[in-house]
Length: 402
Image 1 (cartoon, rainbow, N blue to C red):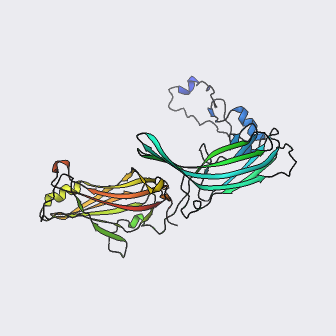
Image 2: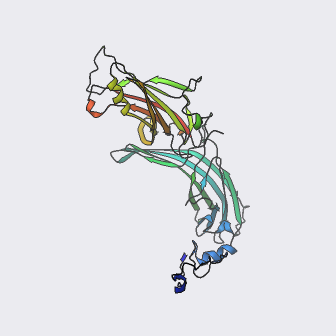
Image 3: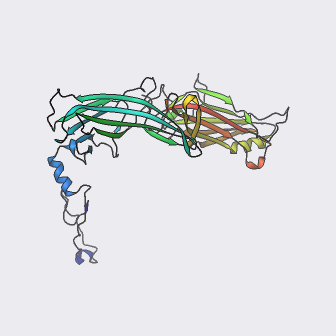
């Protein structure tokens, strides 16, 4: 709630045309005066109740979920999100409070569940659904002795850790996410379920609370430092150089015995990097017979970081991939030491720090990253000049090395 107070009107003598008048700043205090604007996010009723109530059961300070029979708290709000968020090996901590109406309880159970869903679509219709549980962690909190069904308002705390790997596998747990494409859609979702089993024909109370899992990941080896990223001096195993093969258009017929320019690409030999790293790329084009072609090719060099989601249906059928261009490379400089020889240096940022990471659930869905370098001439060249392309798959971790 926002409270607005009418400021005190200005006195005309303060605005007198007197340059010798020296006005001092008003005295400041910890409490607002009547002429100041006070902003409050909470209503007076909520402000008064928070001081007296337990913050664990405050609807404004904690993740609180209520029904007529049970109240569930998943701890105090730390981040500004609408759902509880947990990191790598996070601990789901909370408490359950039963109302006096919830009698004849047989068992009280809390579970941490996670699953992956893949929906195959054909002509805008869902043709197949694949569902796989990646986390299933039940915990029984209360099992009263037989014959005792006394109503209670006792608080039942619980604590459930996130496992490191997918259930029955060795792959790390994937983060919460959802992707869509024309041929498939996939979801990775987590939730906390609370089951209150009651004796007889009484209603079984079930509450499902969605949560988010955003784990951190780290590269398997040190990545190049930014200050030495563009040092292309020979170092054992630091960089690799490959020749970019030509790709002719479908309706073009390559002429035999014609020497085709073969550009080369030099880039780091690592396979795992951190999100936000800067990858150096060096593209070299040499053609002493056609120096004008070198200039045309250097104008069409493009480097991209591509994020691709791949999903599988039953039987190992690949449903397709959804591609998103995360970043494009920036041209640092171009050197032309002699006619018909040019070298361009690019810097490709691997997304933003802490935002991108690779993950995989076997035979279900996979998130991969590609470095794609393309060299093409302007459209006016027609079918006389081929296109050059190279794609390298890399792994991305959300955190830097160490």
